[in-house]
Amino acid sequence: MFKQPPKKPLIVPVFIPNQGCPHRCVFCDQVKVTDQVLREVDASTVRNTLDLALQSPKYDVAENSEVAFYGGTFTRLPAAKMRGLLQAVEPYIRKGFFKSIRVSTRPDAVDQEGLELLKRYGVRTVELGAQSMNDDVLRLTRRGHSAEDTDRSSNLLKKNGFKVGIQLMPGLPGDTEERFMATVEEVVRLRPDMVRLYPTLVIRGTVLAHWYREKRYRPLEIDEAVRVCRKGCTRLEGEGIPVIRIGLMSSPSLLKKGEIVAGPWHEAFGFLVRSDIYHQRIAPFLPKPGEASTVKLRVSPREIALLRGFRNQGLRVIEDKTGTRVAAVLPDAVLPAGKIEVERA
Image 1 (cartoon, one colour):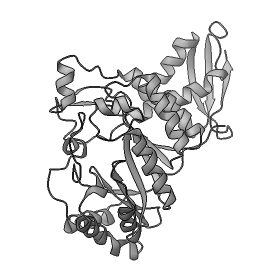
Image 2 (cartoon, rainbow, N blue to C red; image 1 turned 180 degrees about the vertical axis):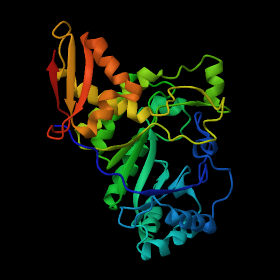
Image 3 (tube, one colour; image 1 turned 90 degrees about the vertical axis):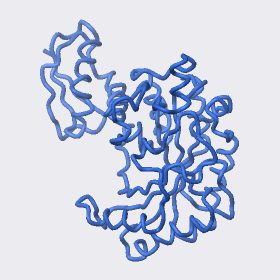
């Protein structure tokens, strides 16, 4: 049964690039990914960020709003530092401007003492940068943690009442489609509350860029990455685990010429995957080659964009597969989500 993805909360990010990280992974350059200079983030930085967010026309106090600390290993910061950042958010939660806090961290940086501190200051969600559940891939990527660490920390977080997010990176060194889908199965077993999928990009200045130049690493092509993410997303959401992000968010630093050396970068990567998922679902309704020369497609208005695809590529895919020209795409508010009607000519 087709389900609309859950409504996303309004998240105000506070980036702490690489802070708390014990070392640099082969793929990582958080400064470019987050478009933040490598500087110390303190309580005043947090307050300035939240004050600006409150002035934004996108802010709505009625939304399920959160403050999120991204880009570093939050729970490996010194306790006083964690406390200071969380205390800076506390008045905004007390006044009802934000409902909760989320943080991201490494699977090997979660312990009971740290979780007690997070609970005290209103943290409800912890996202784990697992990246893979294959120990060979983790070793090659120099992550410094194991799949067992992700298993242990996920269970500890759940035991303490936190929502758990897991971040995965298909296409890492040593990864294959089969290995990634095995990772997905392990994540299904862990039953997190949400997952993010970030296909691996080769960013200038990283170890991975050096390996790419030496032909020691081959990144996924766009079509490979779309297929792998489509399969992973379909499996996860089929088990009721929402995938809340597919592909890195663009930033001015990351999009400077030459910063992305190679890999499946696309300005609308997540939409490519969602459109591909949609096309897989409607395939049984389409005519087989030779059954019609021209068709009109009726679809829920909310799904016209998914049907058309990025710059109408979805319509061209339908025409190539069926040998049929799509004469029109017609909105039909009566049709349920995930269903189309075909008028043959």
